[in-house]
Every structure is written in C-alpha cells, then in structure tokens.
Image (cartoon, rainbow, N blue to C red):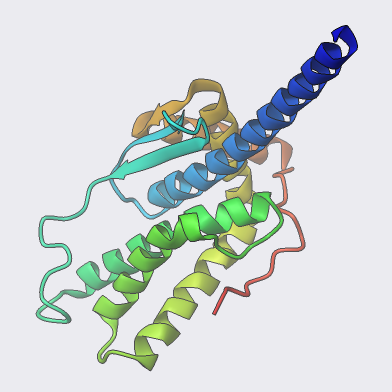
Length: 211
C-alpha cells in the first residue's frame, strides 16, 4: 500500500511540475503577445492606457488585455467622408491588432495565429474592410498588406528589442501603464544607441498566415 501511495504521489508531483512549466510557457507567450500590442501602440502614437498579464480565474492559464482608446468617430460610416489622417489612423490600428499574434508567433517560433487570437485578426480585417472601396478581394489584399507590413516592423532588430524589453517588464510587474511602456522602450533605445547592439528577432520569421 505504501509503495502504491508513494508511486501515486510521485506521479502527482510530476504532473504538477509539468502543469507549472506549461503555465509558465503560456505566461511568457502571452507577455510577448501583449508586448506586441503595446509597442505598436507606442510606435503608432496611439493612446495606450494599460497592458495587463494575469492568470484566468478558472483555468489558471495566462490571460491579459491591452486597454487602448478608440477615436470618438470610430469606425464611422463605411468609407464615408474620412480624412487622410483618419485613414492613416485606421491603418495603424490594424497593425496594432496584428502585432499581438505576430509577436507571440515569433516568440514561440510558429508565426501563424491560433483560435485564441481570432479576435485580434478579425479586428484587423475590419480595419482593412473599412479602408477598402469594395467588399471582398480588395479588403483581403489590404489585410495581407497590413500583415506583411506589421511582420516587417517586428523583424526590425531595434523594434524587436523593445518588444522583448516590454515583455520582460510585464512578466515582472503584471501591469504596465502607457508611461511605463514608453519609459521601457526609451531606456532600451538609449542603451542600443550607446552600444549599437540591438537584439535581433528570430531569423526564421515567415510571413505566411493561415488561409
């Protein structure tokens, strides 16, 4: 009986360690996801309020959210009476939405979105639709351009070093406001300027997305 209990306890302890490792991996992936959103908000001069990293109440799995204000006119009537500035803003929001799944994909070396990222992808597609003259293929082409442009930005060594720094800070503090994100990015930028050695993103990055 004692041997059986000891075996069961060892098996249970092993399961706890595996589960703990899985949760830590998921937490890091979510930190990079949130950092991607935060960095693109700063890069695009978009109003970032806070970025959070937390564990789900029921599953314990990593969750989080990025609080970003949208303009009062957003999105407005489809393609009606927008200024060039407003259209540029929609483009930057589209890139911001895609930056989360792309940054997480780079970190986990699998740059194709998962079902949990569909909300971000759908939001980006809606931005593309708002800018397209017609429904259908043109919106899809514009969405692909947003995907490619965002991936290209994240491949930039300096910008990836910002994502990495914000992710590390988020893992340490769980919550960053817009000012803290800016401070983190500027500190890395100053160090890179002094040392001229920004950290490069993984070189494997593929721009292919799920169809």
